[in-house]
Image (cartoon, rainbow, N blue to C red; front, side, top):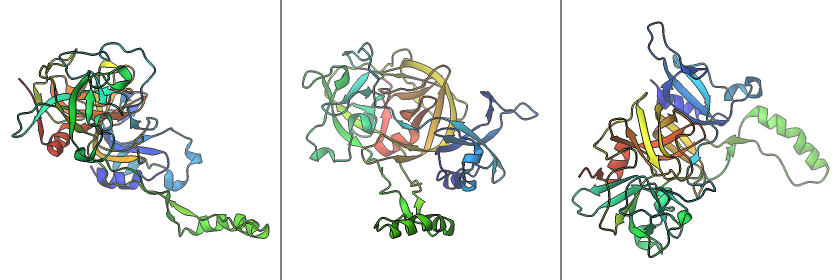
Length: 356
């Protein structure tokens, strides 16, 4: 499937927030062919569905792209899931010792609260590390050696964690986030746009105004983008539990695949289960300090009931039904969750799960 070509062609369209590979659905049910097989398609995520006639021809998503069917779904805007609802701090938001994956954590002072994803080790390094998101335990691209704050607490600051009593780790490594487009586009050579701007500019000149309308091309999301939102902190506590609440211990690693049943345990929504509905997807994600960030080669999950992720679940491990680590959750909306693939996280941070 020509997903790269589809992404480059469709992502710049108005209202589009993601493009990936998934199954075509109708009225919430998977559409199947005459032999009963699910129909694979290019899934286009939009902030909201609008009437076709309100869109320009250029902004309409074609029913077919290079002989592949498309399916437009409304997800709402995609954002990092660090903004927390106003809720009373309860387990897993409490102070828990020994620490374990799935509970509250965060850069402190700094970030409100997210989730410990997994306990890991780096090749050739005897230390134990906790894995979470960049926006949970790093929060900016300043190198670790140049920072004033590297302390990570459990629970996170929002949940009552304080330094120095609740410090469990020190930030040690992260993958920098590329975000921000640097502006709203470039001057356009479109004749139609110039014609539309001509009359208002003439009127402005007649009344003595120095302001002019300048047609601009819409900013196109950077297709290279980011692969992961991930960071590591070296544990400063001796005791830890490898098991996640409700799930148990990770027993291996795997590749996220379309239709795979998955589970997660996170700081806010606790235990949720669902299905991977998109793979090899590109999303434009809001909530980063320098503006929106484009993420490529991502997976999207839909919960069996309610949201798969909510604010504070950032950093949760995405785990298959047979307890294989397949991804790292970091973003989403009210309808879908988004995760990096485990392969990309492990490769860029040079890590592996601790199994015993």
